[in-house]
Length: 250
Image 1 (cartoon, rainbow, N blue to C red):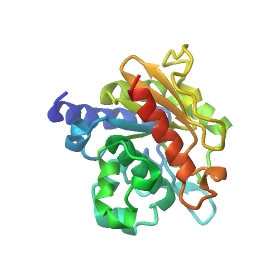
Image 2 (tube, rainbow, N blue to C red):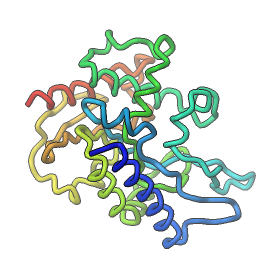
Image 3 (cartoon, rainbow, N blue to C red):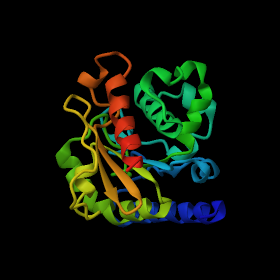
Image 4 (cartoon, rainbow, N blue to C red):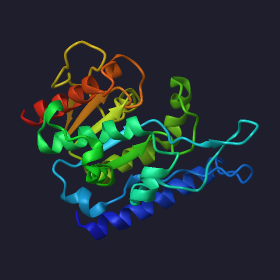
């Protein structure tokens, strides 16, 4: 796929996301509520990367009014990751979540173990790991800081066709699901057993094969729990990287 082709497809996809939100009556004026556009910030970098990595998370976060109603500020992930200053200074920066994703992407692409991953603060170009990945959310509308399973179950049918089209459109080599795999499993027709089972523990990450893609069923990168007990996320990063690298060898 060429850069021009994917750029055009992404622009068309963004329009589909807006149209779907409007059709569902999800766009509101007071308080302002519109879909948060996702995808790839650096299409040149994404297409050149080996392997091409996609993350599928839950939903974008939103701001709230004084009365607690969710709103947003008309922003998009694809624009957010393009600007170093915006990324480093904005209150939208979920530092731990983004850093874990950077470390995982970097380690997979460079076949590194935890101790060999450079510190984020010494390698700010690792922000490129966010730009050159495909990033999509199960729900495209701003949500609260935490997403209940019942809420996501209600959102998935609303966006299912678009989500499946996004996975197909970006042609990723590895898809990392952050506590979202269960929603997609049937529609992706995953019937075979996992090709890689992680060892038991707080940071399980199982890998499945779907044609030319490796699908990794993992926890969400902002999950609070045992995988952060080392203060750095070592167990979480190690589990996903191992699942990816072991599966790529099969």
